[in-house]
Image (cartoon, rainbow, N blue to C red):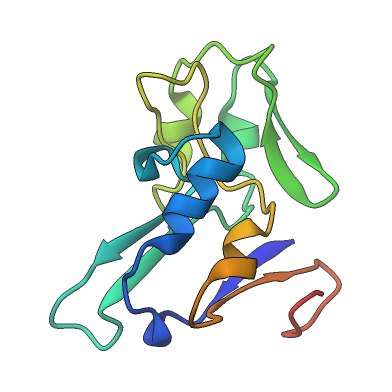
Length: 136
């Protein structure tokens, strides 16, 4: 599974970040969101949506086997994670990051809450078997 994003239609409202932080941490704190909107002025897509693409580089990098692929989604086991940051360094697109209030790295877990509430409908979750079709 992975997130499908139409970056050309993103307006940078960051509602996805608010929804993500509320859904996963029960607080309105976009700095804890597993999805991030980065301004990219002077490019065709004015905003870049940074989100885990489930590549698995972090799985291979984790020295504590705290990260695994579960039903097509890369997940972090907070019980095994020491927050050493090796996975953060291994992430090729900067989608894994740490926050001082959280005892393990944060990443998108493909919960789908952002997809439901994006006012432009630019986010979709693709199942591994889908070829360009957004999963319902």
